[in-house]
Image (cartoon, rainbow, N blue to C red; front, side):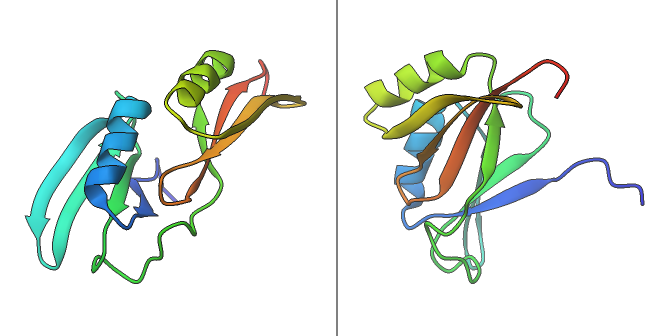
Length: 124
């Protein structure tokens, strides 16, 4: 096998504009693609410099259901500061909590997709 990385992760959303505002304004992601394609808008965002992007898949773009995606782990250098920023933006955050592998918190995007933040412990 010669796999080097994941190209994109699909995040099903009900409203692409609302999702775009959340991922860019709240999480600070950048737009990497915004194209009109049959059967709809191809919209991708990512943290600056990331190899893997997130496709904000709207209605008609596959058999996806908003709010069903779970377990997306976002690595941060300061989970506590990011939790403060999310809370200030009106996002409900659980944690952060100290775990054997790092300090971690969880939250949901406006469609209910589950995301986590982690500041990894050295050596993990």
